[in-house]
Image (cartoon, rainbow, N blue to C red; front, side):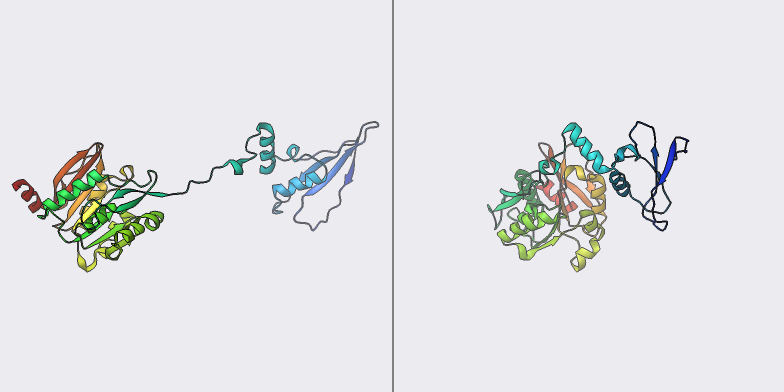
Length: 311
């Protein structure tokens, strides 16, 4: 912006060091009417590379008793904030009025249904961020597995993989009913520290448990590394958050991984209106039951399906 001098104006330059690189060039023109009060007019001429910030410009204008909003293209954020509070009265106590994030807590609503830890209470988080398998569904799943495995009173000894383990109630039930070891996969560190591990300590199963704080997808990708020399798991439970996964993709990845063997049983909890295939790799669906809005599918080897039909 520039102002052309006229006969009625006289130039009174403001002396600045020519070596200054941090201040703009400022010139002051004053009007000289006979009876009117003099009003200073400030004109900015910016050098490229001076690096003068909007706050510096605002401070310079204030030093001459001028309103920065009349000269700067945009008011500073501080000025905009102040005007907004003055105009509406809102936001003056924004920090004080902001509610702190609710602290996560636990309660004991779950219990072990059978086996050596029967009736022991288990911790679970309050709220819906972790949704344990309903006890009626869990009880039915283990009853089906025990019969299919040829031992109605307990599970066949073996290794259990509990995907999306959360509270660990499914894996703990497996140990209580006869499994030799369980691998828990849970990505939430808070749940692992405050729910899963305390439940394992309380039931006395920590020594036969392996906790993997990792995403299920990453665990499946690295399946060969986790199964090691022991090979495929004997049992796998899949209880993901309903809306967080594509069941077709998930079951396809599991079926093609090293986690599954020809004698593996897979327990899947899934929501209503979800299509589940009749097979999962080399395994066949041996049971599919509905519990309200929840479905339970169990896949296993063909010999287990033939055994159920003969029974």
